[in-house]
Amino acid sequence: MEQKYVLGIVLLITAVIGVSMVSAFGFGNGLMKQDITDEDRTLMQEKHEQMKSAIENKDYATWKTLMEEQIAKMQSQITEDNFNKIVENHVKMQDFRNSVESLENQYGMKGQGCGMGKGKMQALD
Picture 1 (cartoon, rainbow, N blue to C red):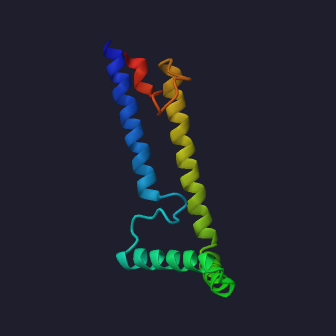
Picture 2 (cartoon, rainbow, N blue to C red):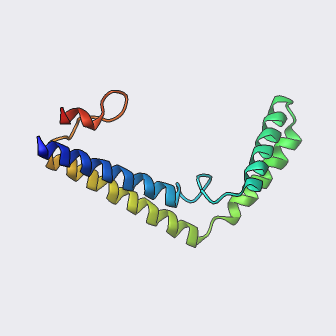
């Protein structure tokens, strides 16, 4: 019984570390960045509304202009440094997944599923 509680704690800590990594690094340092300012957030919402309005009004010229602005912004972010950060984060997440899989195998929890009523904690009953 004690081993089941230790396993539960280990899995909980592992999950917290994983969530912390995603929170700290975001997904590819894109829209999930946590350091976005209120001004940037407002600007993003305005651009979204402009895009939605252009589509609803079938306004190709406005849509094209907005898309070209977005493409230019994205192109400016295509750098070797950003690519290396994405690769580094990918490796960290893969290492995290491998650690979780190793723990699952070690404690016989492989194939227990997760979420939607198939949580890992069911194996602790």
